[in-house]
Amino acid sequence: MRRLRSFRPLVLLLLPGALAAQAPRRPDPKAIVDSAIAAQGGEAALRAIRTIRMDVVTQWLRTNLGEHPFADAPSYERNVELRDYAANLWRNTRTFLPAGAAVDIVRDTVGGRALTAPNGAVSLTTLNLAYVDERRELWAFAPERTLLLAREAADLRALPDTVIDGVRHARVAATVDGFPATWAIRRTDGLLAMVRFRADEDNDFGLAPWGVQEVETWFSGWAPVAGGALVARQRDVRRVGRPYKRMTLLAVTANAPAPADSFAIADSIVTRYVASERKPMWDAAPDSATLVTPDFAAFVPWVGVGAAVRVGGQWALIETGQAEGAAAKVAAMLRRAAPGTRVALGIVTLPTPGNGGVRWFAHERLPLVVAPGAARNVRAMLGAAPATARATTVTTARWVRVGADSLWVEPLDLPDVPGALAVYAPTHRWLDAAPLVGRPALRPQLDALVARLAARGLAVEWVGTARAVRTPFTASVPPGR
Image (cartoon, rainbow, N blue to C red; front, side, top):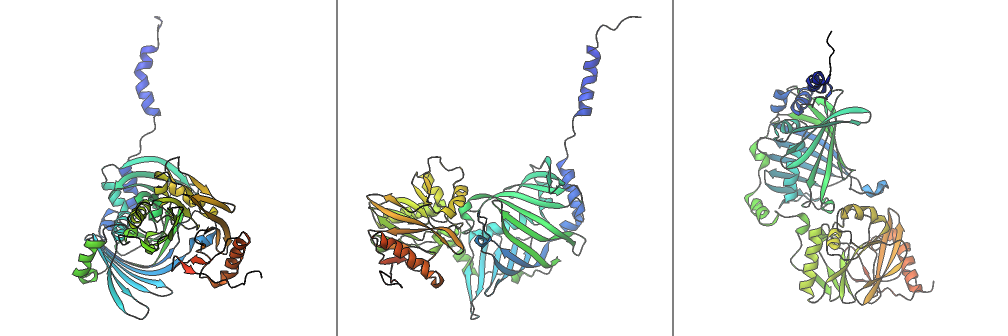
């Protein structure tokens, strides 16, 4: 018998087939999405939903990276939403608890509001571009629509499975209406568990400090509506990894009547919107700073700067603005209002989620002084800002140099506001202690702070409050007692 001299040709012939048998099959992203659509009642049932009416209770939570729950500052409202998906029409009747009401209407790219005051008076006003952005997000990631949109996306692709709470989830990724997104679908019941996407929220006042951010919406409480489609009655939203709001549907009606007059916006409101609201909410300030005195400047609340004080010939901002653009605008205002001066220092005094303006200070390579309770927020807001950013967390009372002069900064631990920072300008005998001033329950802490300053020979004659940058101060405890 002739001996086979080499197995190599045989191996080469068998190898491609062997590798093909061993290689894992790439999942078909459309098959994954189709399976999830079927679990929700099928494509026909979902596409049949052209309008939807939802009665919702919303719990709002302030996005904050601290661990103490009080920092969430929860609030509640009752919503009755009417959406016309085909025409991009959204009517949101809002009842703010315990009082107040508004009807917000977004017609594709414009928005208006009918606001009811406590005395019953109704006033018409514009919404901001941020509400148009919100409508886009809601439409893109509504549980009754989002999988249909994902399936149609040109860049739909499958990702490796993941495990959440011990349950295996399939994942697909795509871009929907400009939002890069990833959907997680349970391998158990086939239903959509969550969607994660990235969004630039610079237009929204409360979200602007976090800039481009990661958003998650989680879906649960699936129940059928007329027509057989399943709709999630519980929707939880997280931003930058923290709870943002919980929406509980009390009632939902698919293909509810949506008459055109339900979405009417007065022509005058549309005109005002086009003229003034297609810009960020924090960009609502007048075109100049208000100089209370040559050394103090005030700004409208939307900007996010509490005050500016001139020390040593330069300006220090008390709070840095809601966004990088807000800080830049404030700096330009001050240059115009007081030629020859510049912003030289930013101070973050409160452990709240404002102060997105720290990114402007980082890019301008200007120093930042940060309250201890705000350090985590500021680090997250700075993100990939230049490594040369000089952000100093103040944990003990100290002097901070500004130009040819100095400020005294002192940490404060107060009820519901731990890790705050008081700022005192000796040149002006002025104290900014925003958490203290104007709160009678905290008057003892204010008097104790003033007494500590007096013991150092630092007299307080003026204070900064939420209502006024500079107002006379009267101690409730006579000196020496």
